[in-house]
Every structure is written in structure tokens, then in C-alpha cells.
Picture 1 (cartoon, rainbow, N blue to C red):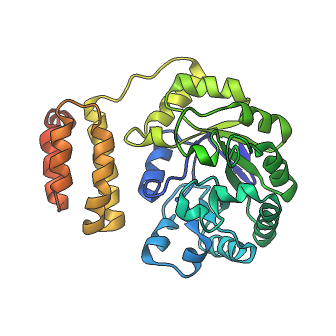
Picture 2 (picture 1 turned 90 degrees about the vertical axis):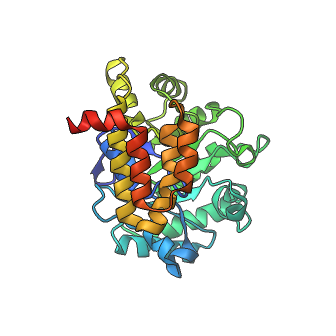
Length: 326
């Protein structure tokens, strides 16, 4: 797939997820098979006047190309300024969020709330596309609610404004993440535009990935929650789509190695205090379904230092650690 001057190694995207898709997670997913990863969403105002947390979200140092930053906002001038700011700091693709269903985002007419105002969407997209000389991509949902699925209209509008690629989550804003994703609207969107369309929603296995591509005709797939604690899902899907064969799941030793590498990157990125706290949720996801995992997670959530977390992991994955050392 080509996005502007950038050729992706495959058409599997890491969905931007607040509090999850930081730089360590993006790099890990790219290493394990994803062709593209988009940063956590930052609002236009917080980016321009923001905190250390916001600056960290837009940190792409050492990340493989292309580097994509997702921005959100409802003011064309501010959104264009945010786009220029990101490009000046290394962003090679600007992604605009019009899919986030969170109330705090929608209450300021950003995220998926914008789907109710196509005229404003046109002004926002035109402003950003005109402001930067890098590709601009867009993430949307199928509509505001089941009675107002206007994804096709918004897709055509985006294409006419110069958007280079469109990702579509197969739910309306009112659905949040409940129920099953519907792919009919994504299929209709794909049929209505010439730009690449990426399907998102409930893609949690290689078989589901194949089924969603067949159902929608989409050009690629975006995986979010299924990659939490399972970043190797990208190589599994990539292999299955190319060969029709399933890869064996990672051994306990490989799982331990991936997890420890991820945690060390988090510690280096955030520092000890924040790194230990961010690591807790990832450890919880990685250990889900493992024998004695509940007690292990309780202990991890009480650990306050890097040394304590490392020790608990060494104890829990003891045999795996020994295999790696051998």
C-alpha cells in the first residue's frame, strides 16, 4: 500500500488507542508484523499549549517510517496549526480523529461528534490538507447512531477534500464498543470512493481478518483492542493472509521475552514512577488466560518499583526465563 511517498510492508494498521499506543507499543507492533502504527490522539489545543504528557504522545524518536500523528479538534484554524506543529516535529502523516466516542471529546464537538456536521468536516479537512505538505488520513465511524449512518457521505466528502486514506470503525458513535461491528457500511464506503479504505472493529484472529476483508472489500485492516497483550497478532494475520496457514502461538519463553522487552522500553520512555504504573495494564493483558494469572496480577498491581516488577515476572515466568538463559 502507498500513502503519499511511503510504501507500507503490508496493509495491517495499529489502531490509535489512548493510553496504549505510545511509542514503545507502536515500535513493538511494527516489529511484530504491523505495516503502520498511528499515535495516540492529541487534541489541537493540548498539543499547542500542552503538557509533558502531550509532548510524550507525539514523540516519534527512533520510530520506523512513516510516522503518523493523530490529532483531534473542531476549530479549523487550531487543527491546521496542530498539523503544522506536528510536521515541524517529525510527523510524516497527519491523521484526523473523527471516530472517538468518548464523551469528553464529543462534548467539545470533536471526535465522532463531528459526523453530525458534514459542513464543519469539510472546513476542517480542507484547512488541514492545505496547511501541510504530507498525506492526511482520516478515522471515522459509520455514523452518529443507527438512524444516521452517513459514512458514505463523509467518505466522499473526505476524498473530495484531499484525504489520502480513510479508516472506518464498523460501529456508530452511539454503539461505543458494544455489540458486534457491522461491515455493510464499510463495504458501501469502499464501493463509493477511490482512496484506500481500512476496516476496523472486532478483528481478533487471522480467520476474522480474512472474513472482514472478504465482506468489505477493504484495502487493509486496523487492529486495536485485540493487540493488547498480543502484539504478535499482526504477524499471525499477515502470515495467514499470505499463506492460508496459521502460525503457532508464541511459546511461554517467547511471550516472556516480548513482555520483558516491552516493559524495558516503557521504563526507559516514562521513567520509573510512571513506567511502572503504565506497565501494570500491559502485564495484565499479557498474562490473561495464563495459569495462576489472577494472583500474579494482584501482586504486580501492588509493586511500586522496576525491581519489584522484574522480580515478580522472573518468578511467574521462571521456566521461560531459564530457557532464554540456556
